[in-house]
Image (cartoon, rainbow, N blue to C red; front, side):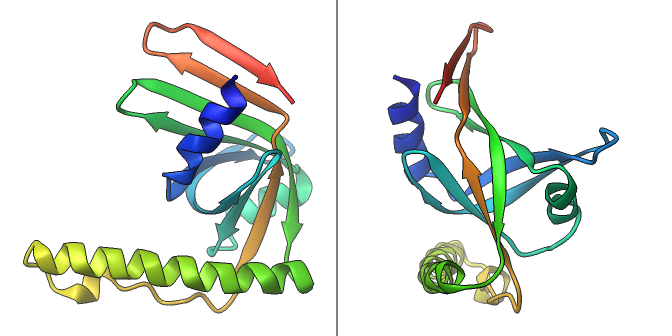
Length: 154
């Protein structure tokens, strides 16, 4: 079953590519930090509050993509997105985000110092404002290196 494989893979990822479009079809694609992956939802963080956010406000559908380099398999998740910008759910995610950022920054600093680089390049500053994208998983597609496509709908 694709869903289980994708969830296991998402646990190991830090970022996903997010594709959005304006109502007239102008595309936008950018990487976003994965906050959490559940059975039917993926939660991403948008720090930039730019085109992705603007597009989602008028066209609330996204396509997420990522690649498993070990198995040479690509994945796509499609579904509607809900913006979480305030409230108790937002506040609980804010705490999770802080923990994730500390862990990511620590890992990056240790790796950078081990490689002889200054740690300044590896620190993450917490954003003043961010938005949570709650993406409902409606469809998952797997594309193998041979071009075979498997699709699974929720």
